[in-house]
Amino acid sequence: MRIIVIGAGIVGVSTAYRLQQGGHDVTLLDKGAVGMGCSFGNGGAISPDLCVPIALPGMLRRVPRWFADPLGPLVVRWSHLPRALPWMVRWIREGKDIQKVRANSNALRALHRRALMDYREMLGPDYSQHIEETGQIYVWQNDRSGPVEILAKTLREEHGVKAERLDSAEIQRIDPHLNPIYKNGLHFPENGHTLNPLRLVEALAERFRAHGGRIINDEFVSFSITSGAARSAKCVNGSYDAQAFVLATGIDGATMASRLGDSVSIQAERGYHVMLPAPNIRPSIKISNRDHMFGLTPMRDGVRISGTVEIANAAAPPNYKRAEALLTRAQEMYPSLNTEGATFWMGSRPSTPDSLPIVDRATTAHNVIYAFGHGHSGLTGAPMTARIVQALIEDAQPPIDAAPFRHSRF
Ligand SMILES: Cc1cc2nc3c(=O)[nH]c(=O)nc-3n(C[C@H](O)[C@H](O)[C@H](O)COP(=O)(O)OP(=O)(O)OC[C@H]3O[C@@H](n4cnc5c(N)ncnc54)[C@H](O)[C@@H]3O)c2cc1C
Image (cartoon, rainbow, N blue to C red):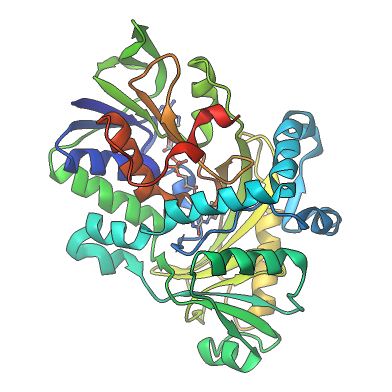
């Protein structure tokens, strides 16, 4: 089939490559350069074990403490509150209903479980240039016996996730550079990270191109639709015909779906990163500070500090004070961190209230497939998303239950 994939982030590129491997004639289209959306600046974690949705019972109790700190892990730009409110209310509801939490957890685990295996298959001999399977650790300075952590532990156990408890001596053994103030930790030996998120997307795009794939630089505007099927993608500089289309447009997905008559709930959870090119020390493993909800990743070109959630309009100017605050927190963890040459970045996680992406057929055009809304874990969820999209396009059975990703849930 002739297929156009719109959006060249990690989701679009993985999907284009997977479809091409399935024998289709695929064109990838983006208004910017490959991988320069949210996929550019993420924390690089690839976490097959990630099965805990963001909205959980007990989470709300933490929110006032976070809100009290304008540079803390979660803030809402008050001017944006009226627009964000429906999404936030739905987020709260998702976290209150334990049945939903369990269902969301099952779907996340299925979506993520094969991530490293799939990247290995997609990248072939280049895999180890891009991905390290060295595990991840979470650390807490404080006691971690609250209800949120107890539920997270239960969910992980239900899914057979390997998570080893660490005391301060064990944390120190894994990462001797870390300030010895962390009393509790968890080690996930089966997770990994990429050494450069942008290079990973580019490498997949290069493989796609090497196998005859086309990449077009143009801005998608709308579909021309007749008899319930999209015939062409109308863009700023031209119109492109195909038999099927994939919308992998990240944060812009919801607007596009609404033009096709589908209402989905997506909010920009804006995150920040600081890249340190000459950090002086290198964490020996991808590490998450769970007291302050951010992480450090040892990457090829330095150390990346990333995290925080800012509920705001995706197009509003960044507040780089949030990135500076990340830097200060990271220096508490690694006092000898060299911050010279630090660069800052902000990007919008395309987040749904239930932490699950939308991977489904559009209602008014059966040959348009949505593939967006991956929130905090798109790098991890991209390969399985690509497999589901392929199944939808080929009218085949998806490799996992795709019902949780339907847009009709909104
Ligand atoms: C601070 C931070 C840390 C993160 N850490 C992690 C992590 O450690 N692990 C993890 O798994 N995930 C992480 N994430 C989440 C992850 O980065 C996202 O879920 C993922 O990048 C989403 O990918 P995408 O391809 O859907 O979107 P994008 O990468 O944003 O790609 C969408 C593309 O669509 C294009 N596009 C949009 N509109 C149009 C149009 N009209 N015409 C043509 N092209 C268009 C854009 O130009 C863009 O290139 C993090 C996110 C942030 C912000």
